[in-house]
Length: 240
Image 1 (tube, rainbow, N blue to C red):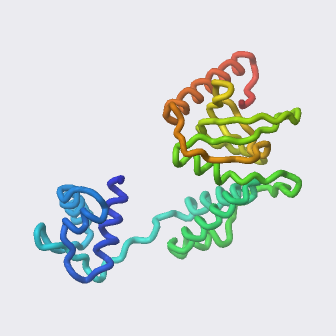
Image 2: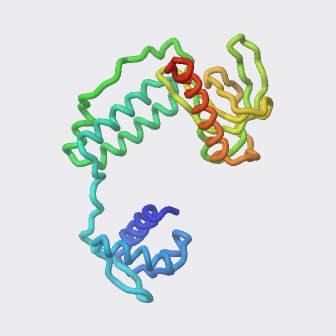
Image 3: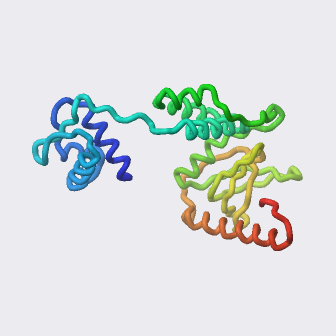
């Protein structure tokens, strides 16, 4: 667990009780050593969080302590709103819903000045007609990426030919109208790009790739950089 996450969780533990909580109890809940808890408590006190108590007796958080609101400037809030608009009009319904849910949570905790920017944004995107586009659900792809699992699916080529693929997911890429899965293909023994709307019967397997995603991501970036360099050398600036 990251240090910032631990500090937040310790505050949450202290907030939910009016009785002293020992370092041992905190350590057991967040699964760290007591020494780590002592160090984190000292850091919180150094940040002027009103924690009282000491080692061996337990710790209390002052009743009047309030966590500060999410500190976003109006300009930062506008940038978030613009990004959420882009995701919402992309042909991926699951991701669009997640973007709207996240924006609602952010709106709830923002100071009033920044919240107005989200409710009445001054930045916008050109509307995109997605009615005629296929709308793939990328939920299983994102699940495979998060958990580090192999994916299997049926793929339809541009010519309409079907093939069975097992891949090691590396990255999901988006443009205005499409989603692209970048993955190591077991059948081809190389990195390949797959259009999400041409994938069907998608399954997340429980076995893990034979190579770590970080290594595959590095290989793909190096490959992409070579392609971009070659195109620049040929006198074109087209993206891959």
